[in-house]
Length: 258
Image 1: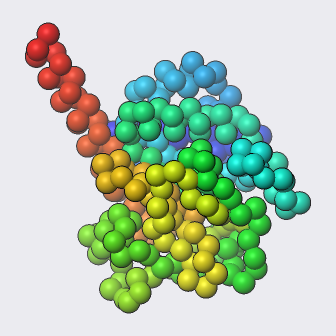
Image 2: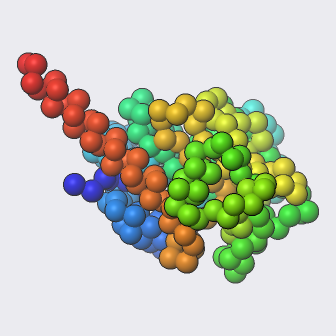
């Protein structure tokens, strides 16, 4: 059975964005061996809870919205976009279930910011212009990130042969964001950053027994062209499959002693 990956609809008010973006996440999950399960963000909490109960991992996608600064105790910056309360609510429900059940989590762009705020972190609401973080879809490689050589992210890329053995370890990435994590949330550690301005570009769980990885760039957009992007998705889907197998074993052990 393929691992089922919950993906919330990226945005509740921009069907044009959803139509363009959501198929890329679904394609990357399918090609990596998973089954995408799209979660409507306008569903009731009960409906969302029922849907996630049958999923093995959570993928938090990008969005044109920005997380409401009130959630991390900040005043709204003039360049901060309007929040999407429906998406925020869905992300929170999915993350609560994933952390309670130790399901794998993979956040992308807005998904990384959403995860960080849910873990009580904060955001830089508008990044400086010294690095082209806002490059968008037209620039396949906007800038490089530097990786912590001891991170889970570096290990994933290294084992897939998708990381050049440079010192320091760097990776070219696409980029389409104007906000990023400031203070990292509880239980998260830095995995990659921009060497030119220090912007946090990837974070992961500080706990080795829970797969939580978030990147600020968009591996779904260049999935078919980039070995690194394929390696990240593959690792996430494999972790979700392993979680499903562990759950099945626990259920089998319980049934055997009844």
